[in-house]
Image (cartoon, rainbow, N blue to C red):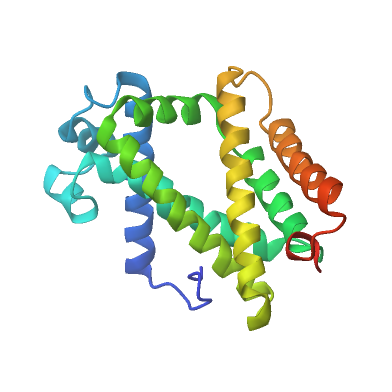
Length: 210
């Protein structure tokens, strides 16, 4: 097993990652089943097969479980998906990466977590703050793929617009009940970007240059 940097991961580090993932997944499952406020730290620790003390070795609060899911998990997955896409224009690479990610969404779990985030003002505020982190992570992934400094600003624009499209697509999907795949909503959002940019400006070097 290797880390994101490509370096081998030690047995101790791997066990820690596995425990962190188990705690996070247990917490998310209980939030969805019982509600965020009704789920205690002791309940998460017991269901994850750890002590309360061990819980605090990984997370300072149950809020951090949701923030970890939002920030580190999504950002790392998005970077990996962007770098794995075949050669294409940046906006199409991001579109393909996002379609790959939404294909793996566990619908009811995702909607349950989103409901928890929207119901808690503190978590909602923190959720909004994560969008900037996602934008930065996506921009860094694009710069890693296209390292020309002259293109950095245009690639940041791609990151900003693409994440906006994904936010709107996910919101529309949830409002529709999540009964079908989120992919068509994402496809429509990117189609609207192209229609507006290309339809009104001819071509977009910033969004479409390969």
